[in-house]
Image (tube, rainbow, N blue to C red; front, side, top):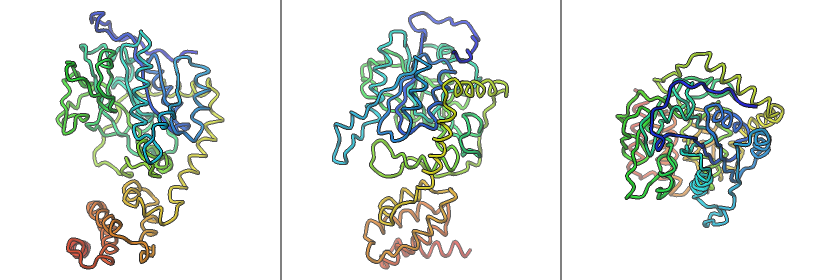
Length: 414
């Protein structure tokens, strides 16, 4: 079986020495059984020749799903990289698991002599050209040769329906964060694999553009674009960092690869942006894409397994607060951050207020309540006041805490 081929739109005029011949995509994944089929299908659809995955610390049916896919597609390959944890720190894990797994996959990708370019992304990131028709080779070859081609995130807001397919939700906002396509020569001159823009050897003169064709201008940090980047990009990375609320709550329990914390720390809750952009693609293009995804699921015999997996995700979402008060307070600042804007936030906050702190409060926890309260000043002043009052109860002489309590009370009254 072959997926629908994306038609050629133009003739390439570049020299053979710089032409993009084939592109690989690599990702490091954990507990992606509900979604990895969508990701693999997507990169097949847009013409990536090779798809390499590293699986680590997984606890769900990711491997079973991939085995079904790999039995049908020989250009999809996965590796289990749990061996990296054999070089663990005192927490029992290797905090560089993700970066080292990506480095390993890039090495595997460039073993294929036909691969001239490689894109590294996460499993919730989907490259797409704004025309939604060019395949990846056509896209890369539409630019003058570049050692690094960085593509901006288009971050998707919360999905209304659970387990929606990619691009059903068209609302997004573009950010300075990017993911980068690199050439073989760039890989050979890489000093360190970093997740957004690789760090290269100082003596390697690498050209670097974004998806508008402009020279990439770095921002405050090396892996961020300057705020003045061109808004007219020819491709984006759809970042499905939330999906539906149910899926988001389940996602939080997957942890970060560099941490032993129970919940992911690199999420900021569910918030609504005042101003969104919307995917401007003909419905016929999206229909072809979604029809192809349905065909992919059928061909790989995934439907029955996916139904069971999705039920497991729903159960996992219900377990987000199924822990003791002591465990909850250990990462209370993280829980306030990641649960912000969810339907369970009010019950979570009520639970925090009801805890008897007399025998468990300490200085670090008082500081956490103070800092959380301040972080919520622009979100919910009532939450700020209630948390600052907890801090005040156990540090009544604290000048900042006392000042903030008075400030919040005055603001709420007015």
